[in-house]
Image (tube, rainbow, N blue to C red):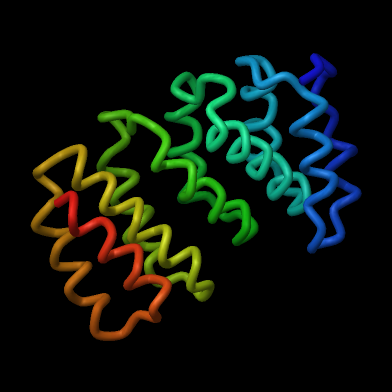
Length: 172
């Protein structure tokens, strides 16, 4: 990885399908604290392509174990309830599994994920349930409420959601 400064113009090349611009950005920029901070700031903006690109790069770095995401964990959690592109929200939710959740954000994350279980996109719903499970795994006080939400979901959610729930029940 190089140490080029973060330049959002790469994200403007996103056509809504090919992630090539995002892959190029992830390879071009260094996953250091400065770049990660710049990317979360870009994710908070209003440009959908930039939101999706910034969160995609962060998710890639976090999933592959490069860079330290803990310093931006609170910001990631804080972005989840914000009005964002569905793919950006999905990326943020998918990052939670790789983070130690900030204890001072558990209640807010629980509320945000509970709201997102009603999202029109099923993968956002699936990963919102995953976020709920992760809050309950970290803090027992949420387990009864999350278990009830999981039970209710089993009556009306698609297979993608139920698969996430089944996986998380093992840890509760």
